[in-house]
Length: 374
Image 1 (spheres, rainbow, N blue to C red):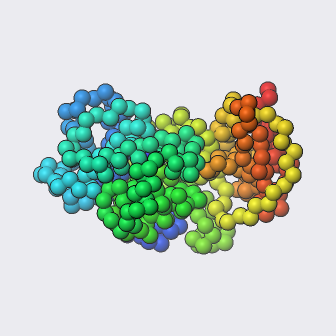
Image 2: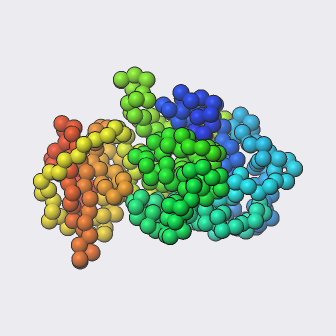
Image 3: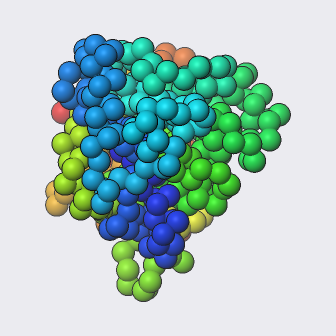
Protein backbone atom coordinates (compact mmCIF):
# COMPACT_ATOMS: atom_id res chain seq x y z
CA UNK A 1 0.00 0.00 0.00
CA UNK A 2 3.01 2.32 -0.03
CA UNK A 3 2.30 2.59 -3.75
CA UNK A 4 -0.94 4.41 -2.92
CA UNK A 5 1.00 6.98 -0.89
CA UNK A 6 3.52 7.43 -3.73
CA UNK A 7 0.68 7.85 -6.24
CA UNK A 8 -0.77 10.61 -4.07
CA UNK A 9 2.61 12.34 -3.70
CA UNK A 10 3.14 12.02 -7.46
CA UNK A 11 -0.14 13.89 -8.06
CA UNK A 12 1.12 16.78 -5.91
CA UNK A 13 4.41 16.75 -7.83
CA UNK A 14 2.62 16.68 -11.19
CA UNK A 15 0.61 19.74 -10.18
CA UNK A 16 3.51 21.71 -8.65
CA UNK A 17 6.78 20.43 -10.14
CA UNK A 18 6.05 18.88 -13.55
CA UNK A 19 9.70 18.44 -14.59
CA UNK A 20 10.55 16.54 -11.42
CA UNK A 21 7.46 14.38 -11.88
CA UNK A 22 8.55 12.97 -15.25
CA UNK A 23 12.03 12.09 -14.01
CA UNK A 24 11.50 11.14 -10.35
CA UNK A 25 7.71 11.03 -9.69
CA UNK A 26 8.02 12.67 -6.26
CA UNK A 27 9.63 15.99 -5.34
CA UNK A 28 11.18 16.82 -1.98
CA UNK A 29 8.36 19.26 -1.25
CA UNK A 30 5.54 16.86 -2.14
CA UNK A 31 2.67 16.45 0.32
CA UNK A 32 0.02 13.77 0.72
CA UNK A 33 -3.66 14.58 0.49
CA UNK A 34 -6.41 12.98 2.54
CA UNK A 35 -6.02 9.82 0.44
CA UNK A 36 -2.40 9.07 1.27
CA UNK A 37 -3.08 10.17 4.84
CA UNK A 38 -5.92 7.63 5.05
CA UNK A 39 -3.51 4.79 4.21
CA UNK A 40 -0.88 5.98 6.69
CA UNK A 41 -3.45 6.58 9.44
CA UNK A 42 -4.98 3.13 8.98
CA UNK A 43 -1.55 1.50 9.09
CA UNK A 44 -0.73 3.39 12.30
CA UNK A 45 -4.08 2.36 13.77
CA UNK A 46 -3.48 -1.32 12.98
CA UNK A 47 0.05 -1.14 14.39
CA UNK A 48 -1.40 0.34 17.60
CA UNK A 49 -4.32 -2.07 18.04
CA UNK A 50 -5.90 -4.03 15.16
CA UNK A 51 -8.90 -4.87 17.40
CA UNK A 52 -9.71 -1.29 18.34
CA UNK A 53 -13.40 -0.59 18.95
CA UNK A 54 -15.44 1.44 16.48
CA UNK A 55 -15.55 4.53 18.69
CA UNK A 56 -11.79 4.42 19.31
CA UNK A 57 -11.16 3.94 15.58
CA UNK A 58 -13.23 7.04 14.85
CA UNK A 59 -11.41 9.08 17.50
CA UNK A 60 -7.96 7.85 16.37
CA UNK A 61 -8.69 8.72 12.76
CA UNK A 62 -10.17 12.15 13.42
CA UNK A 63 -7.22 13.11 15.62
CA UNK A 64 -4.83 11.96 12.90
CA UNK A 65 -6.58 14.13 10.33
CA UNK A 66 -6.76 17.12 12.65
CA UNK A 67 -3.19 17.01 13.99
CA UNK A 68 -1.32 17.37 10.72
CA UNK A 69 1.92 19.07 9.85
CA UNK A 70 1.23 21.21 6.80
CA UNK A 71 4.76 20.59 5.55
CA UNK A 72 3.77 16.94 5.04
CA UNK A 73 0.01 16.99 4.42
CA UNK A 74 -2.10 19.16 2.14
CA UNK A 75 -5.78 18.45 2.72
CA UNK A 76 -8.41 19.51 0.24
CA UNK A 77 -10.95 22.12 1.36
CA UNK A 78 -13.55 19.36 1.68
CA UNK A 79 -11.35 17.24 3.91
CA UNK A 80 -10.32 20.27 5.94
CA UNK A 81 -13.99 21.12 6.48
CA UNK A 82 -14.68 17.61 7.66
CA UNK A 83 -11.83 17.64 10.18
CA UNK A 84 -12.76 21.03 11.63
CA UNK A 85 -16.54 21.19 11.34
CA UNK A 86 -17.13 17.44 11.03
CA UNK A 87 -19.60 18.22 8.27
CA UNK A 88 -19.35 17.09 4.68
CA UNK A 89 -21.44 16.01 1.72
CA UNK A 90 -20.22 12.48 1.12
CA UNK A 91 -18.95 12.59 -2.41
CA UNK A 92 -15.84 11.05 -3.96
CA UNK A 93 -13.50 12.57 -1.36
CA UNK A 94 -15.07 10.78 1.61
CA UNK A 95 -15.69 7.56 -0.28
CA UNK A 96 -12.08 7.60 -1.50
CA UNK A 97 -10.79 7.95 2.08
CA UNK A 98 -12.93 5.06 3.24
CA UNK A 99 -12.18 2.77 0.30
CA UNK A 100 -8.42 3.25 0.74
CA UNK A 101 -8.82 2.58 4.47
CA UNK A 102 -10.56 -0.69 3.67
CA UNK A 103 -7.96 -1.68 1.09
CA UNK A 104 -5.28 -1.07 3.73
CA UNK A 105 -7.18 -3.28 6.18
CA UNK A 106 -7.26 -6.02 3.52
CA UNK A 107 -3.53 -5.58 2.95
CA UNK A 108 -2.94 -6.32 6.64
CA UNK A 109 -5.58 -9.09 6.75
CA UNK A 110 -7.46 -7.14 9.39
CA UNK A 111 -11.23 -7.32 9.74
CA UNK A 112 -12.70 -4.06 8.54
CA UNK A 113 -14.57 -2.17 11.25
CA UNK A 114 -17.95 -0.58 10.71
CA UNK A 115 -17.80 2.58 8.59
CA UNK A 116 -17.10 5.46 10.93
CA UNK A 117 -17.24 8.28 8.40
CA UNK A 118 -20.93 7.67 7.89
CA UNK A 119 -21.38 7.83 4.10
CA UNK A 120 -24.46 6.25 2.59
CA UNK A 121 -22.97 3.43 0.55
CA UNK A 122 -24.63 2.71 -2.76
CA UNK A 123 -23.89 -0.02 -5.30
CA UNK A 124 -21.19 1.98 -7.07
CA UNK A 125 -19.27 2.71 -3.87
CA UNK A 126 -19.79 -0.84 -2.60
CA UNK A 127 -18.44 -2.35 -5.77
CA UNK A 128 -15.46 0.00 -5.77
CA UNK A 129 -14.33 -0.90 -2.27
CA UNK A 130 -14.73 -4.61 -3.07
CA UNK A 131 -12.88 -4.37 -6.41
CA UNK A 132 -9.88 -2.42 -5.08
CA UNK A 133 -9.27 -4.81 -2.19
CA UNK A 134 -9.68 -7.79 -4.51
CA UNK A 135 -7.30 -6.41 -7.14
CA UNK A 136 -4.55 -5.60 -4.63
CA UNK A 137 -4.88 -8.96 -2.86
CA UNK A 138 -4.81 -11.14 -5.99
CA UNK A 139 -2.08 -9.22 -7.80
CA UNK A 140 0.14 -9.60 -4.73
CA UNK A 141 -0.38 -13.35 -5.08
CA UNK A 142 0.98 -13.28 -8.64
CA UNK A 143 -2.12 -13.18 -10.86
CA UNK A 144 -1.66 -11.71 -14.34
CA UNK A 145 -3.57 -8.70 -15.62
CA UNK A 146 -5.84 -10.80 -17.81
CA UNK A 147 -6.46 -13.33 -15.03
CA UNK A 148 -7.32 -10.44 -12.73
CA UNK A 149 -9.65 -8.87 -15.28
CA UNK A 150 -11.52 -12.16 -15.65
CA UNK A 151 -11.64 -12.58 -11.88
CA UNK A 152 -13.33 -9.21 -11.41
CA UNK A 153 -16.41 -10.55 -13.17
CA UNK A 154 -19.31 -9.26 -15.23
CA UNK A 155 -20.02 -6.08 -13.26
CA UNK A 156 -16.49 -4.70 -13.63
CA UNK A 157 -16.20 -5.80 -17.25
CA UNK A 158 -19.65 -4.42 -18.10
CA UNK A 159 -18.91 -1.02 -16.56
CA UNK A 160 -15.62 -0.84 -18.40
CA UNK A 161 -17.29 -1.54 -21.74
CA UNK A 162 -20.50 0.45 -21.33
CA UNK A 163 -19.73 3.43 -19.08
CA UNK A 164 -18.15 6.73 -20.04
CA UNK A 165 -15.63 6.15 -17.25
CA UNK A 166 -12.99 8.30 -18.97
CA UNK A 167 -15.00 11.44 -18.12
CA UNK A 168 -17.44 10.62 -15.33
CA UNK A 169 -16.43 11.52 -11.77
CA UNK A 170 -18.10 8.71 -9.85
CA UNK A 171 -15.86 6.70 -7.55
CA UNK A 172 -16.07 3.56 -9.72
CA UNK A 173 -15.12 5.58 -12.81
CA UNK A 174 -11.98 6.70 -10.97
CA UNK A 175 -11.12 3.09 -10.22
CA UNK A 176 -11.73 2.13 -13.85
CA UNK A 177 -9.32 4.87 -14.93
CA UNK A 178 -6.74 3.61 -12.44
CA UNK A 179 -7.16 0.07 -13.79
CA UNK A 180 -6.74 1.30 -17.37
CA UNK A 181 -3.58 3.22 -16.43
CA UNK A 182 -2.18 0.08 -14.80
CA UNK A 183 -3.27 -2.30 -17.56
CA UNK A 184 -1.46 -0.24 -20.23
CA UNK A 185 1.66 0.19 -18.09
CA UNK A 186 4.89 -1.81 -18.06
CA UNK A 187 6.08 -0.83 -14.57
CA UNK A 188 5.01 1.24 -11.55
CA UNK A 189 6.32 4.54 -12.91
CA UNK A 190 4.57 4.26 -16.28
CA UNK A 191 1.28 3.43 -14.53
CA UNK A 192 1.49 6.69 -12.56
CA UNK A 193 2.52 8.59 -15.71
CA UNK A 194 -0.57 7.21 -17.47
CA UNK A 195 -2.82 8.28 -14.60
CA UNK A 196 -1.69 11.89 -14.50
CA UNK A 197 -2.65 12.34 -18.15
CA UNK A 198 -6.31 11.61 -17.27
CA UNK A 199 -9.03 14.02 -16.20
CA UNK A 200 -10.40 14.19 -12.68
CA UNK A 201 -9.07 14.09 -9.13
CA UNK A 202 -5.48 13.04 -9.74
CA UNK A 203 -4.78 12.48 -6.05
CA UNK A 204 -7.54 9.90 -5.79
CA UNK A 205 -6.66 8.27 -9.11
CA UNK A 206 -2.96 8.32 -8.22
CA UNK A 207 -3.64 6.57 -4.90
CA UNK A 208 -5.82 3.94 -6.59
CA UNK A 209 -3.29 3.37 -9.38
CA UNK A 210 -0.34 3.26 -6.99
CA UNK A 211 -2.03 0.67 -4.78
CA UNK A 212 -2.75 -1.52 -7.83
CA UNK A 213 0.54 -1.09 -9.69
CA UNK A 214 2.74 -1.66 -6.63
CA UNK A 215 0.96 -4.97 -6.00
CA UNK A 216 2.40 -6.32 -9.27
CA UNK A 217 5.52 -4.26 -9.91
CA UNK A 218 6.64 -3.15 -6.47
CA UNK A 219 7.66 0.47 -5.85
CA UNK A 220 11.16 0.40 -4.42
CA UNK A 221 12.65 2.09 -7.47
CA UNK A 222 11.50 4.63 -9.99
CA UNK A 223 12.33 3.18 -13.43
CA UNK A 224 13.09 6.01 -15.83
CA UNK A 225 12.87 5.74 -19.62
CA UNK A 226 15.70 7.29 -21.62
CA UNK A 227 13.54 10.15 -22.87
CA UNK A 228 13.07 11.33 -19.28
CA UNK A 229 16.74 11.00 -18.28
CA UNK A 230 18.58 14.32 -18.22
CA UNK A 231 21.91 12.86 -19.34
CA UNK A 232 22.91 9.81 -21.36
CA UNK A 233 24.91 8.56 -18.38
CA UNK A 234 21.97 8.75 -15.98
CA UNK A 235 20.87 5.49 -14.38
CA UNK A 236 17.54 4.07 -15.64
CA UNK A 237 16.53 3.29 -12.06
CA UNK A 238 16.41 5.68 -9.15
CA UNK A 239 15.73 4.65 -5.56
CA UNK A 240 12.31 5.96 -4.55
CA UNK A 241 12.92 8.87 -2.21
CA UNK A 242 10.45 10.31 0.27
CA UNK A 243 9.90 13.92 1.37
CA UNK A 244 11.71 14.53 4.66
CA UNK A 245 8.65 16.06 6.30
CA UNK A 246 6.60 12.95 5.54
CA UNK A 247 9.33 10.62 6.79
CA UNK A 248 9.63 12.62 9.99
CA UNK A 249 5.93 12.38 10.84
CA UNK A 250 4.94 9.00 9.36
CA UNK A 251 8.14 6.95 9.35
CA UNK A 252 6.75 4.26 11.68
CA UNK A 253 3.58 3.73 9.64
CA UNK A 254 5.55 3.57 6.39
CA UNK A 255 8.04 1.08 7.82
CA UNK A 256 5.13 -1.00 9.17
CA UNK A 257 3.63 -1.24 5.66
CA UNK A 258 6.99 -2.00 4.06
CA UNK A 259 7.80 -4.77 6.56
CA UNK A 260 4.46 -6.42 5.88
CA UNK A 261 5.04 -6.33 2.11
CA UNK A 262 8.54 -7.81 2.45
CA UNK A 263 7.49 -10.49 4.93
CA UNK A 264 4.62 -11.75 2.77
CA UNK A 265 6.28 -11.42 -0.63
CA UNK A 266 5.18 -14.19 -3.01
CA UNK A 267 7.31 -13.23 -6.02
CA UNK A 268 10.23 -10.98 -6.91
CA UNK A 269 8.73 -7.91 -8.64
CA UNK A 270 10.05 -6.14 -11.72
CA UNK A 271 10.76 -2.78 -10.09
CA UNK A 272 13.05 -4.43 -7.52
CA UNK A 273 15.23 -5.94 -10.27
CA UNK A 274 16.68 -2.62 -11.45
CA UNK A 275 16.57 -3.39 -15.16
CA UNK A 276 15.77 -0.90 -17.90
CA UNK A 277 12.24 -0.27 -19.13
CA UNK A 278 12.93 0.28 -22.79
CA UNK A 279 11.10 -1.68 -25.48
CA UNK A 280 12.87 -4.98 -26.20
CA UNK A 281 12.58 -7.36 -29.13
CA UNK A 282 12.26 -11.03 -28.18
CA UNK A 283 13.34 -14.02 -30.24
CA UNK A 284 12.47 -17.69 -29.66
CA UNK A 285 15.50 -19.87 -28.90
CA UNK A 286 15.99 -23.62 -28.64
CA UNK A 287 14.84 -24.76 -25.23
CA UNK A 288 17.13 -27.33 -23.54
CA UNK A 289 14.91 -27.37 -20.43
CA UNK A 290 11.74 -28.96 -21.86
CA UNK A 291 12.17 -32.06 -19.67
CA UNK A 292 12.94 -30.15 -16.47
CA UNK A 293 10.16 -31.11 -14.04
CA UNK A 294 9.05 -28.21 -11.88
CA UNK A 295 6.70 -29.07 -9.03
CA UNK A 296 4.82 -26.60 -6.85
CA UNK A 297 7.73 -26.28 -4.43
CA UNK A 298 10.17 -25.43 -7.24
CA UNK A 299 7.66 -23.00 -8.73
CA UNK A 300 7.40 -21.17 -5.40
CA UNK A 301 11.21 -21.00 -5.19
CA UNK A 302 11.37 -19.67 -8.73
CA UNK A 303 8.74 -17.04 -8.03
CA UNK A 304 10.27 -15.91 -4.75
CA UNK A 305 13.75 -15.65 -6.33
CA UNK A 306 16.44 -13.58 -4.60
CA UNK A 307 18.51 -10.42 -4.60
CA UNK A 308 21.51 -10.99 -6.90
CA UNK A 309 24.91 -10.78 -5.19
CA UNK A 310 28.58 -11.41 -5.93
CA UNK A 311 28.10 -15.20 -6.04
CA UNK A 312 24.72 -15.18 -7.78
CA UNK A 313 24.84 -12.51 -10.44
CA UNK A 314 21.84 -13.55 -12.48
CA UNK A 315 18.39 -12.86 -11.05
CA UNK A 316 14.74 -13.61 -11.80
CA UNK A 317 11.64 -11.48 -11.60
CA UNK A 318 8.00 -12.25 -12.31
CA UNK A 319 5.85 -10.00 -14.46
CA UNK A 320 2.40 -10.68 -15.84
CA UNK A 321 2.82 -14.37 -16.68
CA UNK A 322 6.54 -14.34 -17.59
CA UNK A 323 9.75 -15.09 -15.70
CA UNK A 324 12.56 -12.73 -16.71
CA UNK A 325 16.30 -13.31 -16.24
CA UNK A 326 18.58 -10.31 -15.83
CA UNK A 327 22.10 -9.35 -14.84
CA UNK A 328 23.55 -5.97 -13.91
CA UNK A 329 20.58 -4.08 -15.28
CA UNK A 330 20.47 -6.01 -18.56
CA UNK A 331 17.37 -7.95 -19.50
CA UNK A 332 18.50 -11.24 -21.08
CA UNK A 333 15.89 -14.01 -21.26
CA UNK A 334 12.30 -14.76 -20.48
CA UNK A 335 10.12 -17.87 -20.32
CA UNK A 336 6.78 -19.20 -19.13
CA UNK A 337 5.65 -22.30 -17.27
CA UNK A 338 3.18 -24.75 -18.76
CA UNK A 339 0.90 -26.76 -16.46
CA UNK A 340 0.96 -30.49 -17.24
CA UNK A 341 -1.78 -33.11 -16.62
CA UNK A 342 0.12 -34.40 -13.57
CA UNK A 343 0.00 -30.88 -12.01
CA UNK A 344 3.71 -30.27 -12.51
CA UNK A 345 5.14 -27.61 -14.85
CA UNK A 346 7.54 -27.39 -17.77
CA UNK A 347 9.56 -24.45 -19.08
CA UNK A 348 8.38 -23.23 -22.48
CA UNK A 349 8.36 -20.11 -24.67
CA UNK A 350 12.04 -19.55 -23.93
CA UNK A 351 13.10 -16.30 -25.60
CA UNK A 352 16.15 -14.05 -25.60
CA UNK A 353 16.40 -10.28 -25.89
CA UNK A 354 18.48 -8.39 -28.43
CA UNK A 355 21.24 -7.82 -25.83
CA UNK A 356 24.53 -9.43 -26.92
CA UNK A 357 24.98 -11.18 -23.55
CA UNK A 358 21.63 -12.96 -23.93
CA UNK A 359 22.23 -16.71 -24.32
CA UNK A 360 21.06 -20.00 -22.86
CA UNK A 361 24.16 -20.14 -20.68
CA UNK A 362 22.67 -17.34 -18.60
CA UNK A 363 19.65 -19.59 -18.00
CA UNK A 364 21.88 -22.37 -16.62
CA UNK A 365 23.67 -19.89 -14.36
CA UNK A 366 20.43 -18.41 -13.07
CA UNK A 367 18.74 -21.76 -12.40
CA UNK A 368 21.80 -23.06 -10.55
CA UNK A 369 21.47 -20.14 -8.14
CA UNK A 370 18.06 -21.40 -7.02
CA UNK A 371 19.62 -24.55 -5.48
CA UNK A 372 16.30 -26.34 -5.69
CA UNK A 373 18.01 -29.72 -6.08
CA UNK A 374 20.08 -29.36 -2.90
